[in-house]
Length: 569
Image 1: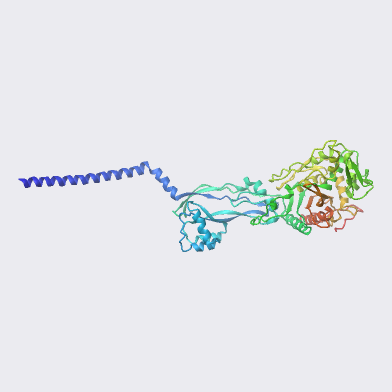
Image 2 (image 1 turned 135 degrees about the vertical axis):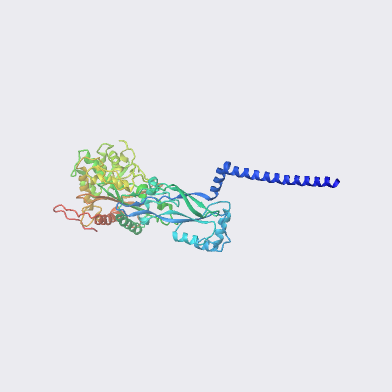
């Protein structure tokens, strides 16, 4: 009887244990099923996002920056495909058999490479080299080092180098304009970067392209007004004269007087935008648009034009300049020597300070300043170029007699070389003033600032400056009639004008019979025995203008009967 009871109790205990195991399994099944349902239905979006975050990346598609060309389509700034090498310090294998080879390929010392990785150990993205050649990037990829990645981008190259550096400017390593036209037209040149989704593995290597989010929009091309042929020629001549006279700096500007386009603009010192490792900040300035100087005697044709515009003077009107000096209140005005009686043409030919002062003091006090303002002095040239200066044209009252006198021969005001070149356009176009442009344009009508005939009269007077009796015989151009005016200006220092420092200037127009070009040459602080505008700047004008006439295929002048050309010397 007892054995049956014990047998029954054993069977009951065994059945209870089976039910317990079954219950545990049931709970596990229910739990697993519930978790699966939760992951599938409730947490699916969250988990998908987390997975994507660890494998799917949004990559930038660099936009191709717009091309910059000269007026004839010659490239001045181009974007070439390059690569950048970057690493994820958390995944890079510094024990990899090719790690030392990586430092050799990238030309980074092994210890320095290790130090950079250790100092950025918590970061996910560190550049090793930017803008390397595709060949170098391929050499890095074949090393197969986990955590080392290659991205494609563009690098800006400047085929003309230092010759066009001041106009074109340059971009930074991210392709953003920093100087010149690259900066001025950044918005249209840069375009718009695109984006795409890619799949990457845990060490950052791109496995596959998923889809494009936004296509890259390339930048718009920009065509400048300059002629690269003239730019090279002007740069060569300017560099030679600055070196020959040990000058501090210099500028040359060539304008098309029919459109106002800048055909050439060069400066010294310059720099190579393709290699800025030894760049000096002073070399960055486009001095033709940013540096100011007193124009000196190059303003005298404008003083004579103002006198002609009064109607009381004609080119043959005689002005007494004896004895070669005159007192204006407490100031003494001097000529180089006593020229006696001069007509208006003779005043320009001999560059008489006394004659110019007598003209200006005999007219209303605001006549000359108004004309200078209409010729663009004291105003921005509105080219859009970053950092361009407006110059200084001071207000002079009727009582400021000395200031009026000195303004008549170019002291007390300041201009840029570009402004001075623009101011000579009305002499070439018989009184029509035109805005200047750094972009190629088809037409520029301008507006009249002088009565008809006045501009041509002054142009004929300036032609005598290059003649046998003038101050700029060395500005003559073989086969062409040219007109212009020299300027030799004392440089302004901290305590007044420096006695032994000068700025040599020549501003001219060619050819006289059918004007096409206005050219300004400015050489700052030439050293040595030659420092006059007729000795330093005029020969550069001659060579630059001669070359421009040939390159632009401009026919030689038709010389008036009985008027032979002046030999170039």
